[in-house]
Amino acid sequence: MERKSIDIGEFRYNNLGLFNEWLLLTAGDFKRNEFNSMTISWGSVGVMWGHPMVQVVVRPTRHTYNYIQKDDTFTVCAFPAQYRNALSILGSKSGRDCNKIAEAEITPVASQVVGAPCFKEAQLVIECKKMYWHDFDPSHFIADFIAPLYSNDYHRSYFGEIMAIYGTDTYVRN
Image (cartoon, rainbow, N blue to C red; front, side, top):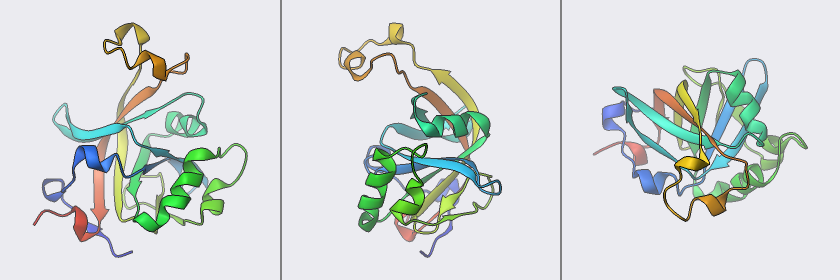
């Protein structure tokens, strides 16, 4: 897939639409061949403490949690529609039980800046370095619809400073 570097000021996205694309979060280290991926549909892109960032959430029971805890970088990738089945595999199976990346038939490759890998087939890659984490606290839930989404397996939120973005022309402002 032909991707080019995208300056943060030229990055075009619809935050609500971006997270409806079934993004792929990957944490770990490519060089050590120790990483795992999971689909995500909750998160945000914005600015925190004056730095561009991506915020993702991971439950402690997910296999990817071990990798995002251990290493200081992660990637978020978007894929063309034809990879929906691959992303379904990556979101429904655990890397503890199988090599789901091989089963999904996507190709991990080294990222440009961070240690966590990205994927050859991705149309968008956002490389991030962790800058903050925080555990969800159910005593802080205000809206009634939130608590029923949990049974004591509360997400940990990670804020990652955007270190690099590259993608297809779809993600570049005109």
